[in-house]
Length: 73
Picture 1 (cartoon, helix red, strand yellow):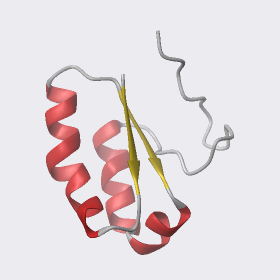
Picture 2 (cartoon, rainbow, N blue to C red):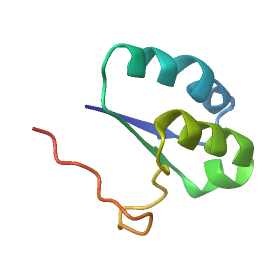
Picture 3 (cartoon, helix red, strand yellow):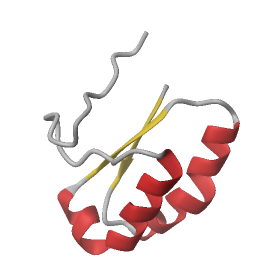
């Protein structure tokens, strides 16, 4: 399992095109958490991340997106 935290840093733009495809290709169960500032700064990138993952990314601790983060096992 891989948890990726994205912020409003410029490198966030590379997450859906470089980091996530490699991680998914290697079989990682990837979950992305985004800061509020990242969501406001890079809305298109957040949409790309959700598309690559096939599920919404998390923006808070609570289960407001319809699923809980899995426990590490």
